[in-house]
Length: 381
Image 1 (cartoon, helix red, strand yellow):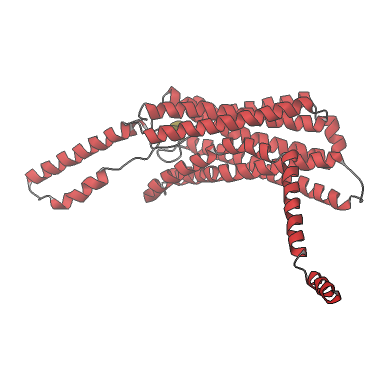
Image 2 (image 1 turned 90 degrees about the vertical axis):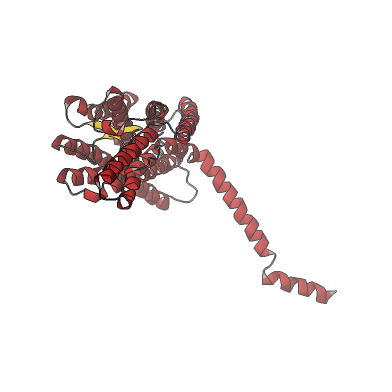
C-alpha cells in the first residue's frame, strides 16, 4: 500500500564545506550563500515526484487487489455451499475481514499515490495537517484496527465453538454476528475520528508521502493518550487472539488423542481447518503489526519526555519500516485463507505422503535383505 520515497539531506554536505572557507567577512557571506543555495536545491529535489516510488505503490496496490478479490470469490462460493452454521459464521467473519482489507488497501493506497504524483508535502508543513492528511491518517488507524479486532473476534468465536459447542450454538447466530461486525467497525471508527475532537492529531510523516499519528515531535498529552490507546487496543487484540487460538488448538489436539480408532468426526475436521486458518491470520498480524504498535508507543513516550534526542532520525527510519511492514498484512491475510483451506492442505498432505512412499521404495531396493536374497538365487543357479 505504502512505498515511502527516500530523501536526501543537503545541509550535511554544506557543513562539510565550512572548514575550507576563510574567516573573513567575504568568506562568511559566501558560506551563507552556499548553504542557502544547497538548502533550496534540497527542498526542490524533495518536492519532485519519484517514479520508482509511484511504481512500487502501483504494484503493491495491484497485488493487494488481486489477492483480496481471489480470496473473496473463494469465500463467497464456500459460503453459498455451506450448510453448517458454525462454518457459515466463520466464513462471514472471514469475508468481512477480506472486504475490510480490500478497502483498506485501495483508499489509503490511492491517497499515497496522489501524494507521490504531487511531489509530497513540504518539510515545513510536516507539523500541519490538511483535510486529506486527516482522512489518510484516520484511514490508516481505522483499517489498521479493524483487522486486529476481527481476528480477535474470530478467535474468540472459534474458542467458544470448540470448548463449549452447546453454548456456542445457542448464543452465536447470523444476526448477532452481523451486530458484532457492526460494533467492531464502529469501535475502530470512533478511535480513528478522535483527532476531530482535538484528542490527538494526524500529521505528515517524512518523507511527506503519508500521514499518521503525531509520535515524534511536538507531542502533547492528548497525542500521548491517543497513541497509547491505539497501541494498547492493537496489542490487546493480538494477545486475546493468541490465548483463544492456543486454547482452541490444545482442545482439538486432546480430542484427537482421545478419539477411538475407526471413529469419524467431520465436525472436528472443520474445526481444525478453521483454527489453522486463524493461527495463520494471527501469526501474520503479529509479524506485520507488532513492530509498528510497539515502536509508536516507544516513540511517543520518548518524544513526550524529551529523551528522543539524537535518536530522532533512527526513529523516523524505523517508523517508515514499521508502516511498510504493516501494509503487508492486507496482502497476506487473503493468502492465509487461500492456502490454508482443507482442500489445499489435503493435496499437500497427499503429495508429501506420495513422496515419502517413493523414498521408502527407493530405500527398500538397497536393504541388506535384498542383497541376501539375490545371493541365494545366484548360488542356486
